[in-house]
Amino acid sequence: MPQTLTPSQCQELAGQIRQWGHELGFQAVGISPASVGDHAERLDAWLEKGSHGDMGWMADRAELRREPARLLPGVRRIVSLRMDYLPPAARAPETILSDPSLGYVSRYALGRDYHKLLRRRIQKLADRIEDAVGPFGYRAFTDSAPVLEKALAEQAGLGWIGKHTNLLSREAGSWFFLGELFTDLPLPIDEPVSAHCGQCSACLDICPTRAFRGPYDLDARRCISYLTIEHRGSIPEELRPLLGNRIYGCDDCQMVCPWNRFAEVSAEPDFIARHGLDAASLLALFAWDESEFLDRTAGMAIRRIGHERWLRNISVALGNGPATPDAIAALERRAQHASVLVREHVAWALNRLRNAATPVLGA
Figure (cartoon, rainbow, N blue to C red):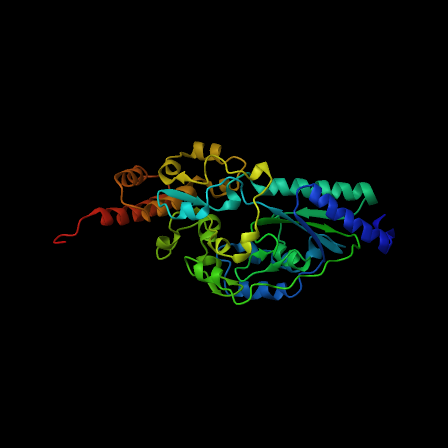
């Protein structure tokens, strides 16, 4: 049983866990205590400001994020794992953002949904550990439970939380997913690494909606990723022009980070961009009916927002683009959509384009 493992056996097992993790496609593996440290207080302060917007589940299950033992009684160590996701052969983000006829989709969402992929790999890691030491207590997570994964990964030495609140690695930047294996094994822990953001504020300065109140302080209610993915209602009118052609997420703070010059493209075929979504026409995407949307996004993270919010987001992007006859005609075809949410954003976009297309008398 794990409780009988000697310190030397635990040390050897930790080395095997790292080796198995790499064999299973993870680029880094670290081990931390089952504690989030002072991140619990930071979470409370962030929630008290209302920074989570209408993500009520962040507050409702905050106690589970503060105390990992609530998710696995008897947990002693947490194995954090990193998997790089930058899709190979995808069009450069800057190219898409500079072309208002195209829709920008966050790089993490271009391929297959990562949740099942990472969970399966972590389960395989748990199976290998069990083969080596016998039955032990564990739970596997990847953005699938109330876990402060960046805090745990930071304590496990996988990197430091940057000013943009993403985890950063000197070797890999920030284009990666995280997963965790909670365990009752008394494994040796890794040392955290020091932060290396220095005086750089590029990520804070680039944010289109000024979502950062300051370093390490993100107001999700102004974040484009929140507005286009998590937010279910109407996008605030004052923020709509700032979204540009971003229709699912935003990567601006990662794109300008100097540490991402060390990021490498993923070797995972599942992360290859699907259906040309790395450089897709807004008009083509807006033409998808619900059936086509569900078919094209099957197995992808994009599907979780549903067709209604998909049309909401693209309406805003079209309203931020050129007032072409095709764009106006496409919006007019959606003007009587069954959804009040869609109709509102279509009307806003049409108003912008029609005003832009109307010549000024006397000019």
